[in-house]
Image (cartoon, rainbow, N blue to C red; front, side, top):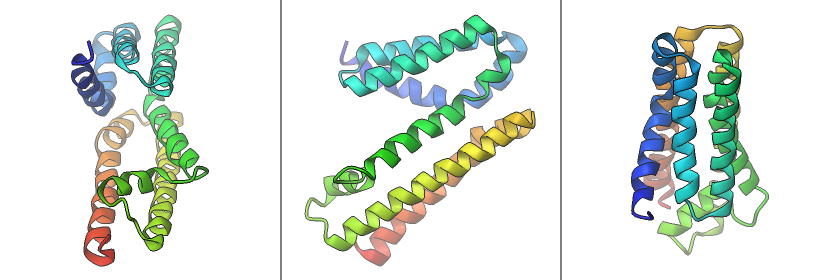
Length: 182
């Protein structure tokens, strides 16, 4: 079973990335239940294959959310999945700011264990910037949902937000490597 985890995790990542399109087109042809059940099954597999207790708990919580959405036949609620993902990422990044090392500092130390004090300050600041990004992402996505701009929701959550994440990640990576040299 552990050998399946990378495959299931990859499928989950792909389905999560493609979710806006899966939901946008799926609801028109299949309705809420098949899409919600598909998502619940993927998260169940992830929970079963994961060894980390927090990851199991989060996976089970997301799975239960999709089961409830299938039971309620709540089409509008299905649009909130990207908001939930951004909120979970905000929680993970934000909580790390209250620990000894921020999430990005931990990642940076994988490549450079002797990270200087300036690097520690920098990675903490970048973690804060990512938290700000997730907040803005939540607000924009929630606004598109409450305004019922479904085409814009699909475009933003399925493409634009990923482009913005890529720009932030790539820009930060280049700045850190070329300017700060850390």
